[in-house]
Length: 165
Image 1 (cartoon, one colour):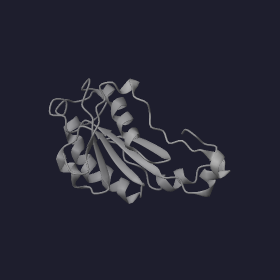
Image 2 (cartoon, one colour):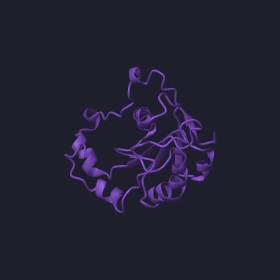
Image 3 (cartoon, one colour):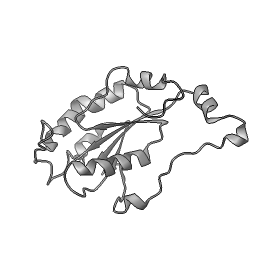
Image 4 (spheres, helix red, strand yellow):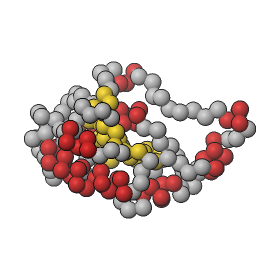
């Protein structure tokens, strides 16, 4: 595990409270709507992966075109560089990943132990990523999905009454 890596025990993840940031608008006299319109929202990009799982890695998911282990290359060559170019405020990779990916200085890596070693592990991986995220807007992606050009700018320009896309 690299110096910027984190680890989160999700054995009882359903019972852990979410650390959502709350705004006390009574002290400032501003409403949450006023706060959002007064500043540009921070956008976090959260990627869940099992590409470094020594057991599940060689397996082929029938719902995906690549074996899990082949996705490390996709993350290193496509997903993380594109997310970096898109200027997300933060990039988080949550799950099981090879340490060779830890060369990306802007990426925070969060180890999440597998529970099922299949697609059902995506939910606790995303949950862990959300716990470490500090953005106002959270973008979730799997390890074989890249963000489109202009995504961050488009999300930051959303009307203030949009909560979920």
